[in-house]
Length: 251
Image 1: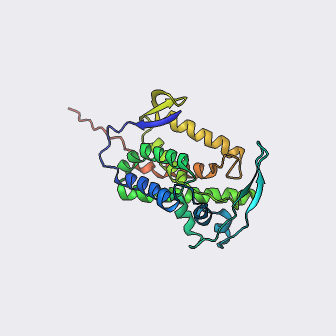
Image 2: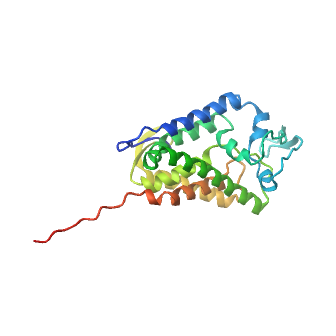
Image 3: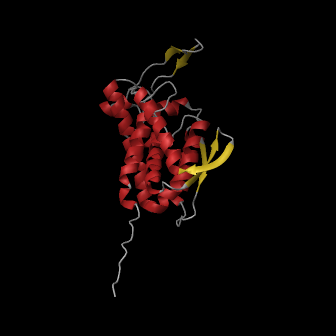
């Protein structure tokens, strides 16, 4: 089930921040990462959990690994020197992506769910919310890696942690919104946000609990998704419209 749009009937604000965030992500991918082909940039600026835990830059040599399915051997680049303080990679990596499919999926979700949340929170609060969601998502990923000892030297990048926070907020603020989706990627229909986002979160939980190292063979940081989502869901409770109290006059 692939989301392709949603109901914006009651949106009042132009989603300027959402558009800027999309433009920044695309700009970084094209001009900074060379359409995702510059591995030096990826291995220099991606967030590495062990670097954040230790506060020190880590450089490792390339290593030869074997694909478990094909049996083919290939060289995996080592961690490159980081030209900025390692803690900045938490923020920088939020605007980097591993390939065209990666950024396309993230920007699609940001465009669908971001504008409604921005409308409810306001431009500045939404920007702050987005950044904090990404930072806490990264913290969740680092924590799981530290506890399990798995994925500590695996570079992590992408906006999905921050976008997961937006999805958590959307679920709480707009549970009844209709979301346009493609069933089986080609049958158009509409379903409620509760169904779309709820199924997405269940999928994250199942995979996250099954692969507690934070990443698995498909390279997805499920702990970051879960952490960002939970922050977003519980953070925006104050922005739920309160029911107006009805007064009665007796005569």
